[in-house]
Length: 259
Image 1 (tube, rainbow, N blue to C red):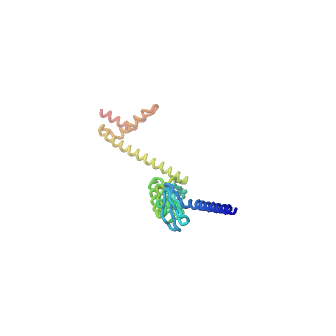
Image 2: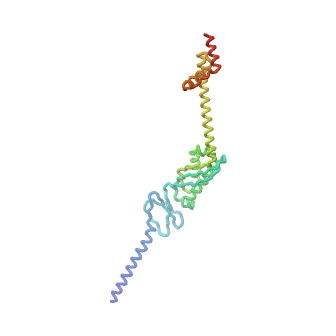
Image 3: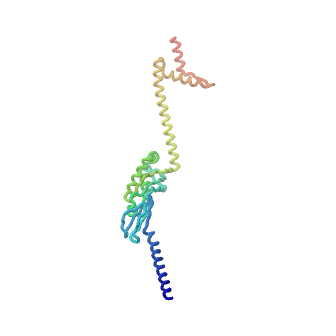
């Protein structure tokens, strides 16, 4: 009887010993076996010190001694909140932008800055205010590509020590006060009228040159040819009353005398 009891206790001890080993293995294995996707990298720290970059794929960590922080290497799209800025020519505008960036050095992104997404966002807002504030409204509206390029260079230079690569920056929307919109519309209208008058004057100048040449050939004053041209246009309209200028009557008398 005692032998059976001893065997039972031995089996129980063996069961609990194997159960303990399995339990320990289940606790340790998740901390040992790590898998990162193709677009991820693992930043490894050994006893608090940077130990390198691992991944993608399957790799092992020493439990307790090593730990890992995952970093996503895909391009991140970040909306830059609207900023109210006074332009170089003292016009208040509201501008927003979109920023595209990715982590180029996972080690620096973890070690050099606490939160690289927040830091990049704050830097982009400050840079947007600075670039818009140093530009005129005309530059902001007409030279958008130049503004984007300048923003790209400034933000990329500031975030490079953090292991961040800025791929593109684009100003999305520029909101102008309503009274300034009316002023711009009036300016555009005046500019179009100016161009129309210049084109009309150039046309009159060219026509006058041709009339002068025609007058030399026909032995007639250029103004007389213009009168005849005008009368031809008026005669096309029905129920039109034609008034002959005094100069035309004088010309007809000269022609009669010549005959």
